Length: 148
Image (cartoon, rainbow, N blue to C red; front, side, top):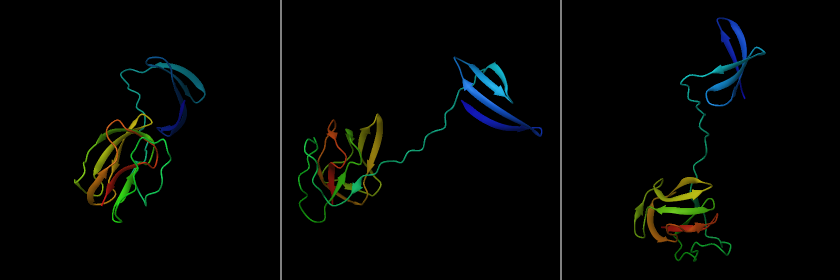
């Protein structure tokens, strides 16, 4: 049920609208119930704002066993791991080893909780190693790739 307060020509109205079947609505105006038919009205829902997941940049840490992502230790101090921010399935990898990437560039598409999430690079650099492939299952914190 959705409640509204309207002021029409200086008069205040308390309106409650409850969706019913098809185009029929139950509407209460200032305490009086009405059953109304809506013509050619599409019910629009307000979009829910959700933060976009970003790749986690941090020093490499051990990952729990049982993960399907390859998590070998990074060789070289300048390489930074890009880790998955949430568990899911890799739908696509947009870069390969040796590719130059810019901060904010989409590098991977991850499906998590029935939603597609773009994973973006947090820094400019060159992809040194891609640790996952399309179809891989990953856990939160798994290394996706190394960027130097």
